[in-house]
Every structure is written in C-alpha cells, then in structure tokens.
Image: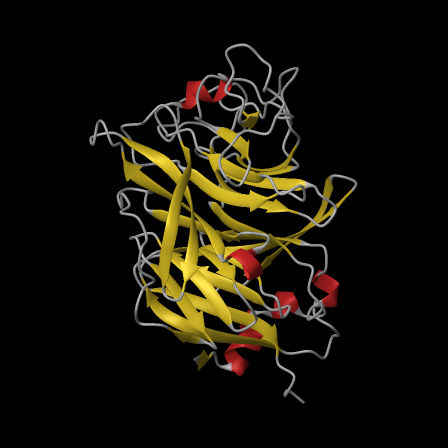
Length: 372
C-alpha cells in the first residue's frame, strides 16, 4: 500500500476543500494495488475485501489492502479485443447467504466464432473459485464489432437485474428498434427469466426484456436509495449524457444527439424530438464517462447524495449535485491520476477509484484522521 504525498495532495486537490466532514479535514489517498491489467469493475464483499475485474479476463481479490497474486479460478473465456473483455462484477443482494456473483463479458458466438455477444453469467464464489455457472443473458443478434458493449449491471430494489447493452458502434440505427439488444437497458430476474411487468412484455414484435431504449454506449449505471436509476453513456464526438432512466422510455440515440460523428459529419440535425427523453446534462466536448456511484457514506458528509462519475478524457471525477431532477452543480475532482476507469463507494464511506490501462491502480480516497 502506497500513500501519496500529502503536500502534493493538498496542492492538487484544492477543489476538495470544505467538501469533507469539515474544512479542517485532510483527504488521504492510498494506492492499494497497481499493475492491474485494464481494471474495469469492482464489488465489495466487506470493508476488507474487494473483487476487481480485469478486462483481459481475470477476476482479482484485494484483501486488507493487498492484491492476491492468484486470480479467482473458473471465470469463463472472454473476448479481450477492442473494448471487449471481462467487464462488470456485481454481488447478489443475498450474497452473504448464497455466495452468488454476476459477471458481464464479451465472448465469441458459439455458432459463428467470428461474431461475438455480450454475456452475463451468475456463479457462486467458493473460496478462490467460481462454481455453478449459469448464463442468464446473451445479447442478440451477435455482432462483428468489439466495441460499445455497455456491460454495466445493477439490482433494483425489487430484486430484478438491470443490464446495459451498447449499440455495437456499427449498429446505431438498431437502438431505435425493439426487436434487438443494441442500445438498450434490459431487466431480467436473477435467473435470467423475464419479469411480467416489463414495459414491452406485451408489445408485439418487441423483446420482453427491454426496459429502455435509444442508448449508445452505456457505461455508468446506479440505483439511488430513493429508487431513481441514473445512467450515463458515451456520445460520439461530444454529447456524452447523464440520464434519469424510466421504464419504457426512448432516450433518442441516434435520432437525437448533442454530438457529431468522429469524421465531423452530422449524425442528426435534431437535439430533441417528441417522445424522446432529454438528458439531465451532457458534455461537449466529451469527458468519456466510465463508472458512477451515488455517495451515501458518513466519511464525507458534504458529499452525501452526490453522484460521482469517473471520466477518462482527460481523466478526472465529476461530483454532481441533483435536486428535483435538475443538475445544480458539477465539481471536477482528482484530476492528477490520468484516465479513471471506475469509481465506487466503499462500505466504510471511502471512495475507490481504478485507473485505466495495462498498469491500472486501485486507489482509496478517505479522510486522514491522523492529520492535525
């Protein structure tokens, strides 16, 4: 475990002054693990134990601030290419009793290996191995690209599971159709069956697992304590969005957008259309949003209820205050670490960051109680 120099920290994080428990609090930043291979998802078994995914295909365990050198066995083979690989990890709400976890990942299609799909499995963590695997979701149709998977997971209060599924980059028009998984949020039961109260369960021609549609590349998903579902997604060149998700709604991609194609060409002349939802906020130029968490801990009382969004361009964290479904304030924090792939709230009230790339770091942000 490496402690980042406090003098450097105070100079570089002046934007954090007064946001902790009091104006006298000092923010401490510790590097818990480094040398991670494209870290992506994280989940907390306890205050002392964290699960991390590496996009390259390993599920890792950090215990008491120490990275276990042995990856957890039993992870399925993944397609580690482009933006694909082992993505999110999520604990079952009853994990303490059943040991179940959920993993999202890209994998070659069984019938046509040149194509691939987004997959979600459920498995039981037994010691340092995964056992009792069950595939609960496979995106359809398969794709020939290794991009825009989405791949975030989240449990609603009723125990159903949300899965974000990106537009596959080359399939953006399909985000407006209800007969496929491109550009959608899906809602399934933990065993993969379909809830009967899904918004399109009785719509002819629609896939019954679809919960919302018209999305691009959805890489942030959180469910707040009040039940609100927040999602963020990459725009093209400009137009990254933060959305409040409601079942059955159309979020517009690519019929409306605040961005343009990477070539500079127009994707749509429209930023709004009847029947299509507007984002809570958007970013132009893009910030490349990655992870997201709602802070509900006690360590930083002034941050309570804020959304924290990790971003990769140029690399920082956005703290966002929302009231009455309107963004009131946005602060830029932690801009000295480079591309930040994910952010999560730890059970003890600290914040955990992981940085992007083949030498990724797990970083803990906390209050330094020993500071004078």
